Length: 111
Image (cartoon, rainbow, N blue to C red):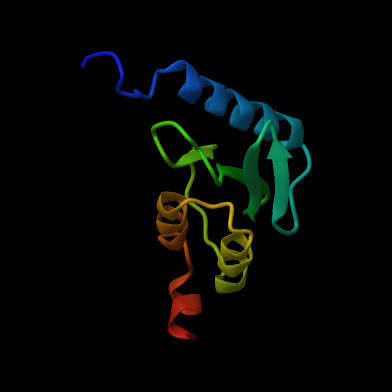
């Protein structure tokens, strides 16, 4: 069967990127000091403070790619912040795997 596979350019994926882009735009002028959790149209987002800017990650994307972050930048995540995100139970397995790759090595050696 053709035409059933979800692609990154699909309507669902574009809608998810639009939500992420809109959220990032609304909050770009005010750097976060701690994690910020938002619910937008049934999607759960987390704002992560990073070097004076905000990184936004969609915790429960339903369309490929299954990890969406804006802006595309490297950031570090503490173990306690990772646990706060995990304990929301909104983040998909793929999102948690991607976020774990951003954990500070220093934080990882403590546990």
